[in-house]
Structure formats: C-alpha cells, structure tokens
Image (cartoon, rainbow, N blue to C red; front, side, top):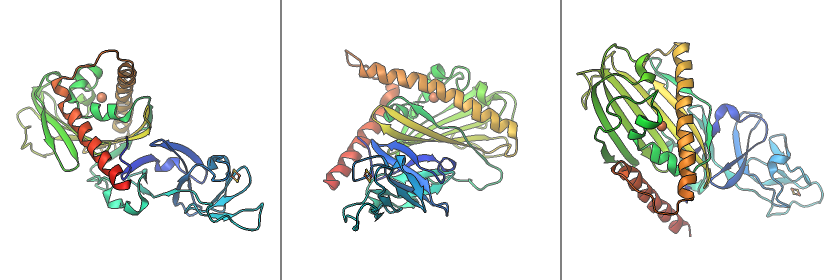
Length: 342
Ligand code: FES
Ligand SMILES: [Fe+2]
C-alpha cells in the first residue's frame, strides 16, 4: 500500500522541539523530539514492555522515559535503563527512524534504515537565491487516501471547476494536455495562449494585459508534487519562453504524507521569482493558497467517501490518463519493494 524506502515530510522543522510529539505515518505510530543539541529523533511510539506509547512518558537527558515503569530509551532506540530490576533486558529496543532537517521541513525515512540516503530528498533550486522567496503555509489534514491528492496534482483541468475564483481562466477547461514520463514520475503540462491571467495571479504577475500560461503538473513517486506556473506577456510564452524580468514563475512543492489509508497530512512550499521582500505579497500567497487547498480538500474528501460507497463502477475520462498511469507504476514499485523485503 505504501512505498516505504522513501523520504516523507513528518512535520515542519519548527514543529518538533524538546518535547515528545506523537505522529502517525504510513500506519505506524512514531514519537519525535529534539535533543538538547537540537538533533531530531524519531522512535517507534510503543514501549516493548506493555506497549504504552512512549509519547505518554517524558524526556530525560535526551532519552525517553516510559510513563508506566520507567524503561529509558536513547535516540537509537536502545534501552539504557530499567529501574525496577538489575539487568536491562537485551530485547528492550524500539525502532528508530532516520530523520533529516531540510528546506524547513523534517523528513523521515520509513523503510530500511540502511538504504536511507539524504541525497534522495528533493532539491529546491534557487532556495538561497535572494531574488526568490519561499513561503511555507500551515499543513492540512485531508480525510482521504493520499492517491486522491496525487490524482489531483496530475490533473490541471480541475482548476476550472474547483478553483473558479483563483486559478481558473479561459482554457483551463479544455486546452489539450501533454503527458511525459520521467525516471521519477509523470508530468502533465500545457501552454494556454493569450488569455486574461487567473484572479489569483492577476496582481502578482509583472505585466498588464493578456498572458501566455504554463501549467506544469509533476508528481514523483511516491507522493511529491511539483507544480510550476509560468506567466509571460501574450506572445512571449510557449516551450521556448523567455526567462526575462517580465516572466513570472511560481513553483509549488507539495508533500503528501499518508497517515493511514483514509487520511493524509499535506505540507507545501511556494517559491516565486518576484518581490522577495514584499510582506503583503507573501501574506496574500499564503492565505490565497490555503483557501484554494481547502477547496481541494472539500472535493477530495467527498470523492474518497463517494468512491468508498459506490455501488456501480465509476467512469474514467481522458484527463485521468496520467493519474491512472501513475497509480499503476507506483503499485508496481510497491510490489517490487515488498518482494525484495520478503
Ligand atoms: S510499559 Fe513501558 S516500562 Fe512498562
Ligand atoms: Fe487544486
């Protein structure tokens, strides 16, 4: 059901502090904290004695002390104290998960720790470029399977109906889509020419009048989506668009972390090539994006329930080609991973 040998976003880095935080990721209960030195730690949230969640205990000198009978575990998951007896039971360990702070996010490796490699964490180009600006919004929990989010992020057409007053514009309902397969996932993209910019972008773009617009929707296995929007003055867009000072770019990075089969934690970053110091623009992007994602949530939660309760098979349309292909390929990757593990 999940690809485990992969990095997932566990939380914003700022959310994990010197206190115990319980999270559920890929159906596993995990406790996170930081040491006094600021290093993040992730352990299985279950004491091996009577399975009290370790998150119900307390932090003591960078160790977790179980809140029932005081077993203590270090950051590697090894039991280092058993106060009720002379000897520490050799089997008293809990699983520890590799974690890395990067891009303001805390990443967790959910598979074989020996295979974790932080060079596999997505690269964010221009992160340190002072002409660009990153915005980080709140995270949202969607009461739906994570694959409804990957479907949605391979489907540029939905903006015409779900985001009528933000991202919709002429062409978003029926301009043809092109699908490309990459070694990491799929890209669906299209250029739409000589239209009014959508409302959300109208005040953000660097020019007046009509635009040429790129929608580039990319999803990488298992569930990272990169959504690149480019707006050029009409006549200047297209595959060889000029990257001059009039071209507006917004790259949205979307990280879906399955909680379980029915719930997903959704984190995102938005990276723009304009107005890096303009706080009003930053605030408008943070709130505008969140409103749009709440529109997605409303639809995707209802789709999850609708499909879970369907009494006849649902239809597929042409626009579903990319998401269906993505799902099939991901399923194969998951099967391959579990056949190697077993
Ligand atoms: S349940 Fe943790 S020490 Fe007993
Ligand atoms: Fe959307």
